[in-house]
Image (cartoon, rainbow, N blue to C red; front, side, top):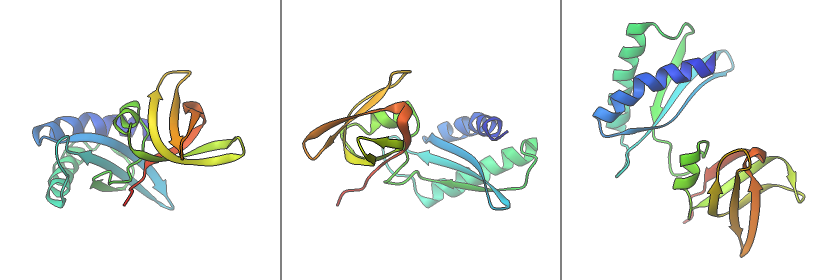
Length: 156
């Protein structure tokens, strides 16, 4: 059910965002406790997303969702920037993060570790996909099917 909601919301959101010079970064529809949350993360290809952008997109998207009565459950709509320490979920998220510091956690330990932080050197998708990190001068390869979570890390 949540995958269908995400696909529906993305189909509505993309044209709205394109008119504003924005792009869709990610969408989540998740239950937390008793409440459902629809989170839409937006980005600006050249520049930053501000509060006015989020508010404007939230109003327009909310109106479209209400008009179509597309989600049967009650939910809270949240529209925001993915932030500096943005999650990496899709192939283009990883490719855009090449050269950045990232934190990757794996489902199971690899060489006794489940957490890896370093510069993302390479990414390849597909069934035999992998990421290669530079961790303090050592090259570490992690198969993409072993990644539980990945995000950029803000470095001061």
